[in-house]
Amino acid sequence: MEIMMLKFLIIEAKSLEKLDETILVSLFSEFIHITDIKRREDGLSFFFSGDQDEYFEDVILNVMTDTLTDLRMYVSHTYPQEHDRLEAHQYMLSILKKVPFGTYYYLDNSRVLSFLGHHIDESIKRFILRKFYDDQAMLETLLIYFESNLNMIHAAKKLYIHRNTLIQRLDKFTQTTGFDPRKFIDAHLIYNLIG
Image 1 (cartoon, rainbow, N blue to C red):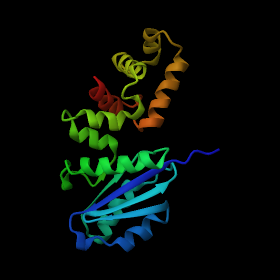
Image 2 (tube, rainbow, N blue to C red; image 1 turned 90 degrees about the horizontal axis):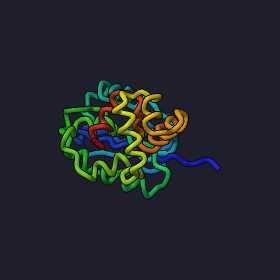
Image 3 (cartoon, rainbow, N blue to C red; image 1 turned 180 degrees about the vertical axis):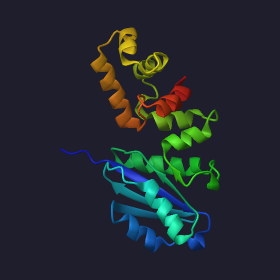
Image 4 (cartoon, one colour; image 1 turned 60 degrees about the vertical axis):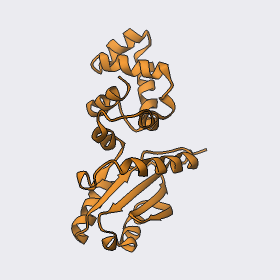
């Protein structure tokens, strides 16, 4: 049985009269299977399935250039269940209000977390960490890995586990959250989040 990976895009326009919904729907339906569209007063949300990582950043930049429209797009990580995706969508709409429109044209969890910096509350931690928010074993694994300067051998020794077990834990974290602790930028963001 194949697990469905659900995602969403939030597209906002600085000026609503310049947002051409038909063009956006036509363009994005060329490379993602849109299952639902939600219209809001400040933009559109596309819901789709698949775990593909399309070139959304390039696409939105091209659309902005071709249409001379100021847009901003947020791309979600994957969600295994519909209610998780809908909950994340609502939450992200509220978080995006904290990010000034002109700051970024392309956003994902990493850029949102980076922008929020030290103004991170428990709801953001819960949103990013998901099921690992209360998982002390995973949080300890991550902290020791970070404090070992991302060195798997040293971290595995400190944790008294095999290196492959550590790799599996990090893979599981990446798959669930979209943040890869083996990448410096992601490690920095997660360390500040849990540290």
